[in-house]
Length: 244
Length: 139
Image (tube, rainbow over the protein chains, first blue to last red):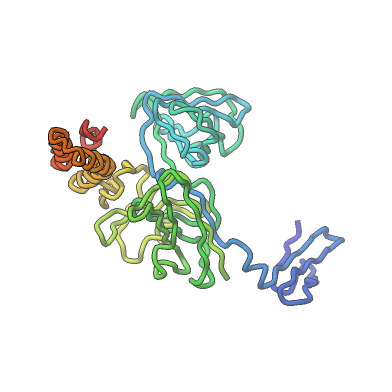
């Protein structure tokens, strides 16, 4: 695979030849087909760049949680990336989509041969308060395994971020109930961006808004989810940032 | 996974939840903790989310509950639960007043006073005990 150097004017190949893009007007999408190398290059104009969501996140506002899973079981089957987690009266539907990390047996971080201590599993369905299903995030299990949690010594610990998916988000800070700061991996061009969002309706009359203009900075944006005057944690909080 | 905690000016703990796997927890701390603020990286965090606002920064554990604040939050749950009950009793009292039913009015007045007194309920000094305390009149 040759090394290609990208610049605002085109693509430079290892032999120092340059193929420029074919953008002909400000705001147009320039596309060049480089037949010999089977490369297609696209350059977005100023207007197109503004249409791209610069940062977004979907998270569970109530999910900061870690603990020891006692009297529970984790089950995976060799050749499958699916599994079940049985834990009496431990689950709710807000956990669907959330990523959990397990530390099994304190030192053995694998489940069916898959590292779930750093890679984790994502909850795929809520079956009941006693059971959820999940998918292993690092491929199929290589062996069938059932782990029974019986306490701190013989069980397993778990933790969750509550963040289902995100883009250009380094972290989310929970400041208080319903009060979060979305921290950007790459800074915004300026602080005059637009914040969109929604939150699930478990709490009535829900409003999600930027906290104050002063807390909209190029590096982070603080948001507040509230039912009238009291902050509320909701199972699904979604935030999108559009800007320059 | 790891979390980062730090104290806020109002005394509450803030918890940073990593989202970008390309960044180490140390890199996230350097970037997202307010400059000059003490912080703690922890592998687990024992926080009862319903009482999040009662937690404060703890240099070893990352966060620990302030029982006094937890009690006040729990009393707010009492107040929230009794509000519609008081409203319903207000209507019942008005109806009893219209029919000059003195005995009914006295009965309702006693119920309202009992609801007002729920915030005088003595709460235990541990979070599990606080959570388990719920006056039957609010059920």
